[in-house]
Length: 47
Image (tube, rainbow, N blue to C red):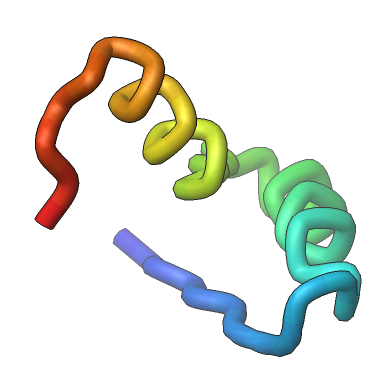
């Protein structure tokens, strides 16, 4: 299994690059921003 992490400043295009890489490699793309937002909606504590 290969795990690729992408970091950078806000608005740098990380999500765009990550989704394109995932499509090229036929891999799953996990958007951590969406996960955090969903957890906040459910009022879960985020560590």
